[in-house]
Image (cartoon, rainbow, N blue to C red):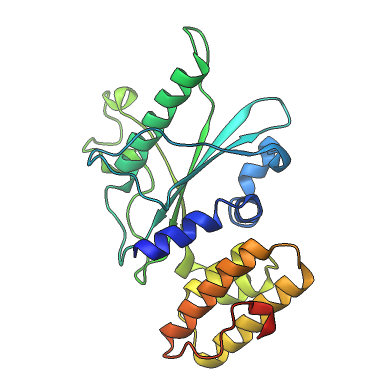
Length: 238
């Protein structure tokens, strides 16, 4: 599990993976004019309640065409089933990120916080069923007068196994190929998928770092169907 966390951390440390993920799977976010040419990684200086931070979580600052910033917080979930309390966790992480931004930018009274786009990337075998916002977790009737004082934090879920395979095949991006590799594939389906991965890197030969990471993903996918033979260090040599 730790190796998979590290692999995803390295994948989404690459600007192209982040850009393709947002363009293809969070298209509504593009309406604010995200400028991927000027995006910058954010080093998180905060920790969860247990004092730990997971390697799979990645944060980027994305400038927009109107001069403001959007902070993308990508939280990767490697577990067999959904986390019922994920909305609370994202509320905590978002609050700690804002505290860090206030301190680093020396924001003062009257200043405004940048928006945060919280994306949960989940690859478990069971489909995600947890609420995507905190309001669904609070024990209040719909018209309670207490609602104005309750937190309302929402995350965007990307459940890799829930996307129809046909839709993913039509996508020509590394993000779509990643989602396909994380789904259950029969051996003949995996062979066709590997051809697509190799074909992408032959058409885009300048991404050696990502090619090495996808070589490891292909190797893991082959091990999942009972074989890892025949995977060279350079994927394009297959």
